[in-house]
Image (cartoon, rainbow, N blue to C red; front, top):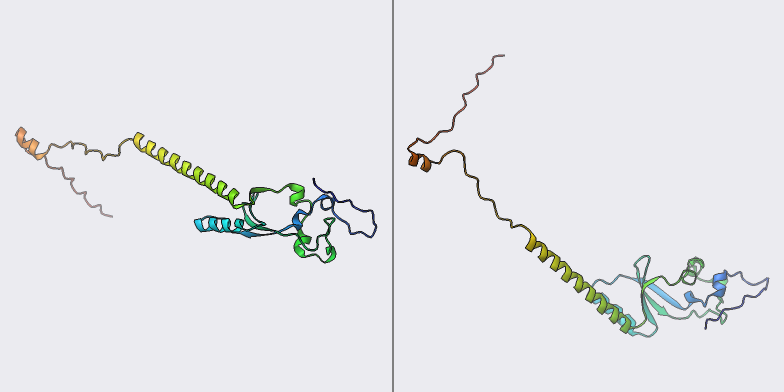
Length: 189
């Protein structure tokens, strides 16, 4: 059951965006920081290490493909009604968050969200299985192209039109000499 806080009609109350008033303070219950997208075996092992720790998640955003490590930790100034206890002096990062573009308004937007090392291991095993299948299909296509491609033998030389010396001797004819062109006379200018 999601608890929805009741907004009071107190004229001295701090104005709160309607999304914030209905939210369970999703953004106030964790800290996350961007990490490099994993590409090596060591990178994937580091992500496993993060996920072995309680309260740590790893996610990849759907729209940007950026990877983050997330530490589940409730802000100590978050009040029981899920409103900020230091609203006037809250950090700039809190001020910069647009309540119309937050995860409450738009949904999580995660391509991947790992909350345990077991989830990550299952995802990684499936990813590797698919990668190996793609490699096998690619290798099969290359092999098929090679077996259906015409051979690439060097064509034999075409026989010359002039009879060879051996052919001339056999026929009793003298071998033909290449005709020489007469030099052009110089034109006086």
